[in-house]
Length: 470
Image 1 (cartoon, rainbow, N blue to C red):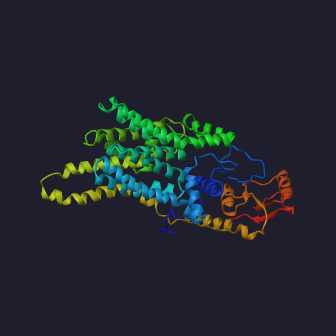
Image 2: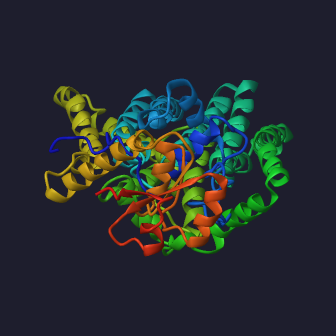
Image 3: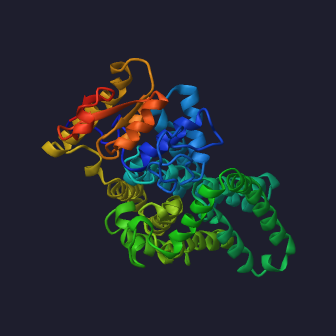
């Protein structure tokens, strides 16, 4: 396996990816009824996002995208990740354009090149990193709202106003209220400008765009409150808990996201980011761009630093802006350094520029992590996941046509079993009561045999026993 890209793994990852895949698969037939288990036959906890029926643990937009691609191209892990690949590609163009508007084409180009080497983004795109496809879509649509506002500020054309509001609304439909981030920089650029803050039209434009955001995001919230009142009320409360308490053990101190910069961007990148932000005070760019850029980055980091729940990807929505800031600052420094009449300095400028940004790119990509290590544990994990996936795909062919419900799946693999077979599955043993409920419904229990099954299962010939994989 040495030399194999670690992000080309053709199996579903824990935790989030397999859940997102299953819900999106079910949404191909029921787009407005997000479900994990389509038809529960046994009692379940409707609060458990790993085993419930109506699944509202995340906003629906990224799931709709995956479901649409499943519908068009078929259901498999490549298609699952295809929307992310396209959004990542689109994000590179958005980053380039934002850098071009804020400063110049080289700043946009180098920022996009560095982003293209993002190890952390690859982990999100391919489901390795927690929150995976949800955060890819969130970064894309939040960045699209930033870009639209910059285009609006540059051209004044009304359609960019509409797009800013629309992209912000879609961002909310991916990961809730932080999708409003664009308005922090927009508002700051108005109130901190001596001329703009006196013009009522600037405030009216912001209100108009925010109205579009509400029109895009609010209908779904009303719909689920009316259609699924119990589940939606619980999940809306769950969303708010993220700010006040460490949900599901995702805790950390106030400096968590500053410390995490090394994980997102590379070793000692926080010093480069800080120096780049400070340099903005000396670089001649449009004041509104400067205010918005600093406000967006500062607001996002402050918000998530104050919030009690901490996860690595939370602040990554400003990654394109961070890289643009770094790129334009280095570009500016090189411009000063080589803006001399000395012919030799001008000659070596392209070489030095490539070396500097090449070093940053290698540092950012964590190149050693991109390749599967040639060690026993890594190869065992990869081969084990492949074998289990092949086994789960073959399960429907091993059984005659009928209704089945799987039990005693390897830990959390019940979601993979449901994804590949279409049958309900659980990672626990059925009780006698469970069996008595299923048999009258003409549902045959299938139990994975780990050699430690209780007697009431081994002696029941109405239960199918299959050797537990691996």
